[in-house]
Image 1 (cartoon, helix red, strand yellow):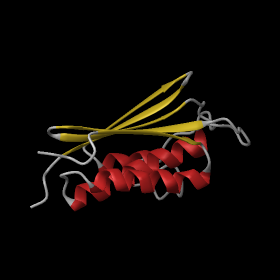
Image 2 (tube, rainbow, N blue to C red):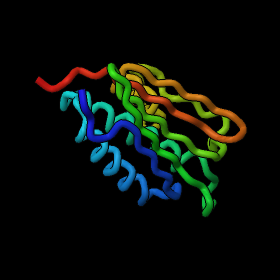
Image 3 (spheres, rainbow, N blue to C red):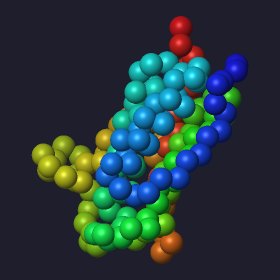
Length: 140
């Protein structure tokens, strides 16, 4: 099994306009992998949610120095993506929407969990890391 990308990493400013660029980069990285199209799209949905959460919640309004790190690596049976920020969660006490809720916001974590095989989120005083994992089923 050969892949065009086995490891990739990029760091971007934590700005709304950069989220689109990060999604595009992730799409390019995933395009070269032996991964079926449905799984590829689901990974992109999860990456998009993780990036947007980092941009929106990690840094207080107007914080010019925040960054979001996007890392992708392959294992024989899975694709892994990590989205990391060095900010602090801006909405203290906010909880994600409950399953089945019709809430307009707070559904990003649920969407990530529905999109990929595994989602792990770690909040620390120095930032948040979202780890996404999708098992690989080569395209037929």
